[in-house]
Length: 228
Image (cartoon, rainbow, N blue to C red; front, side, top):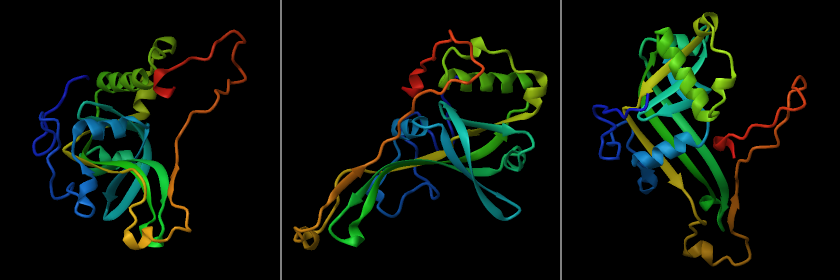
């Protein structure tokens, strides 16, 4: 599962997703990025995404854990999940990944904003039905986030695989929207010298590992590069 994919109307080997009617940014279009490397970096920088889909005319947005291989995005969950049951048949979905990087304080209320990176990906959700392929996808997830850990664990059982649904989505088209930097006050705002303006940066960090109480005393804390 390391190959790149050619997606009609979307992911071209040129390194750029082709804008479509659904992915083209119309407001603040200068912040739009269609570069594959940028979009993939935003997607890969966090395990959390939000998936938008429709069931019987009712829209839903569900947060879930994802991973990516080339132009294929994966997520998984309980086979009893309403979301995953609905997505098995190939329904259109919209996947969003967002990083909130800071608050931007300007000299007028209107010009206050935020620094952020967000990627929006479109495609059709498809269930992986074969047990061997499903197990391979779950192995890939473990190896991506916890390199080498799968070798320490027992193998997934047939019962566990049956209870788990794995969904994949070929990325048909995608766009990122990025805002960074200081406030963009106009001349009227800049004339107000008595109000603080600037950026309140925000970062996400991993905390100190908390060992489970049933661990043996001589087991060291593993260090996974993804979470440094």
